[in-house]
Structure formats: C-alpha cells, structure tokens
Image (cartoon, rainbow, N blue to C red):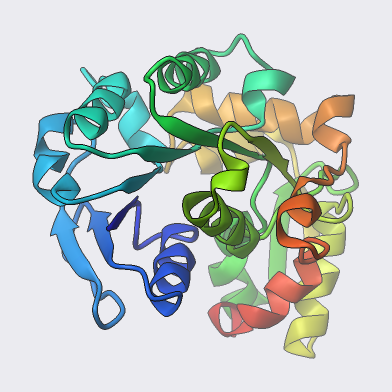
Length: 279
C-alpha cells in the first residue's frame, strides 16, 4: 500500500493515477472528500494533526508526503508525521520539499522544511527528497483573466525561471516510491528552459489559437493581488524570487531526465494539456 497526501492537487492527482495504473494499492489522502480513480481508497485527514493520519497509514509500506499549507499551520509539527509513519510500519517516505532550501535557505518556511528533511534522514526509514522550483501550474492564477479579458497580468515580465510541470514531479515521485534505486536520492526538479511571464503568455496564446495580451504589474500591485490568497510574507518571498532569481534558481537541472530517461516537459506542453482552463 502506498499513501499519497495532497492526493487531489496538481501533483497528487497524477501521482495517484500513475500508481494505480501501475497496479499498486493506493490510499489517497486529502482534507476534503474528493473523487479518486477506481480501486483507490480515499481518506480525509488534516496533516496539521498528524495523529489523524494514522487510519490512512494502516497497512502502508510507502508514503508520499506533500505538506503545502499544513507546514505553516499554527501548532503544526510535520516531524510528527514522519514519526507516525515509522510507527505505523511505513518503510519508505518520498518528501516534496522545495528548491528554496538550498537557493534561499534562511527564510522561515525553508528553515522548517530543511528541519523536516533532516528529520527524515535521521528517521531510519528509506527516503527520497524532491526539490522542485517554480510550477508551470502557477499560470492558473491567470485563468480567469485570460478567459474573460484575454489578458495575462504579472510582474517582472521579462525575468524568467525554469518552471517545472507538476506531472513531471509526479512521475519522479512515482519512480522514487517504486524503485529502491532512488533511496537516498535528492532531486532538484526544473523544466527544460528558463521562461518569462511574457513568454508564458505567448505560449498560452498559441495553445488557445487566439491573442493573449500581457500587462506588466508593479511589484506593489502584484503583492496586493497575491496577499489575497497567501500570507503577505510568502507573497514577498515569492516576488523576491520572481524579480531577482539567483544563479541556482536559473539553473536547469538534469534530474528529471536522470530519473525518467527523458527531458522534462516544456511550459508550452503544459499549456496545451491544460488549455481548457483558459477557454
């Protein structure tokens, strides 16, 4: 049995499907009830309360651990999830971390994630750590404005990073869950090329077959918009990266190809597969 947390999100959904199609028994965990592939067991759990994960871990041999906002919840103790997994008989954990633990290691969220990585290393379990950079799926922030106004509005229009397709993260996670060869592996996951917001708008236009305008926001305008859906500190943190990526954040990593034996998918490929969200 493999347990997938965050199972209804951009990474967990394709990962759950891939594991089920590979003939694995899978338990999908999410905060709320949600549809899952046929044959997949679903459990509702809040990862900010690790004891609540125990029923989902019954009979599990492996765990994909994606914390998202749970890492930052008041009173959250993600290290307890690792201990709960070990106590339930789980042998292997694949942790979704972040590239920021090496590129910008001193922010509060990255310090916490680095501590969780260390807990996992010291747990006695088999482990793999995935460190993705920016996600191609962050372009979904623009879906409504593209649908209604044919507009992408973003800051730093001509500054890019090598965004990664969440489906590639899921494919790497599946490989790490299923193959002992990846035990102890730490993989930095990026897309195949640096791409700017203006170039992403063009890729969306190509996928749609219709024009998409680009409007450059000031940092303050972008911060105000982002602060409506995330803590202001995290908005500032994200804007620091988008506006002034350092060399490590601009590097195209070979790790997706090392694990999967193929190049990572491009943003244009992601846009073509998700074009319905922008129509």
